[in-house]
Length: 295
Image (cartoon, rainbow, N blue to C red; front, side):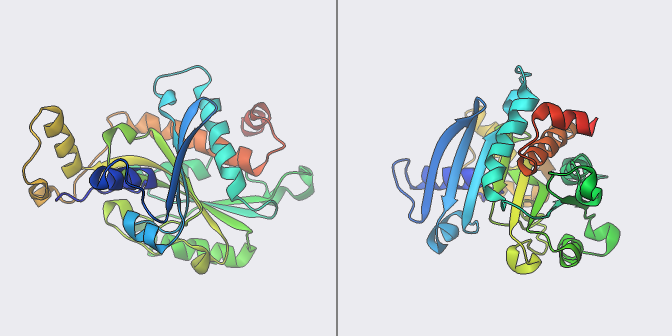
């Protein structure tokens, strides 16, 4: 059987239901749907270890926001996506205190550049002190990758966290999906921490409250799909589902596919996520105020 790689709890839940039967309830998991700013949201809450084992995800809340409106160029899509992301993020954040935002990934590799690009566009306020009274203190860093720095992202972030003692850490990273339709079209927001690189089999040290000493909220967008999964999708669309899905891994086990417009899409998504996170952290600001401050 082919193992579908995905960082999305919504996909993991969908896959479990497909295998077990659409009407089968999964113990330890609560799921539902809602609409924010006219955009679909899927909620998956993993309640206990039984649910965590079934979905292969840690206990916590997972929200998946559909941002495909961006690519359909719907009216006010960037604003709506940013405001919806802010509405999902805000309840996961502590009400007050310094927040450290960490952009994970390799800025030199476009599908992995989402985190650094987002961190570079946030409204950072920790250094302003009394210059802008009323704004929550926010710090940001782009952690770099092990191959360039010799340091794990967790080591960078833990060092900064030990120094500035944030009330929470928000980690932004690129993810892997199991469905082509979700590429650059879904934003997952979770309070369950993050294991960088897990979707592509490149597991790094976990970013969790136990490791960093502060709650960790993760924000991610799938930018790649495993090549074997793509092959299954293509064969199924052609009416020729493979008899042995596992055989598709073969020499392509370490291949991943990304959209042809990934450069533009990652840039636009980083701008949306930066605005959404900034709105969540500074609820007294309207979208127009934020745009003026970031101009």
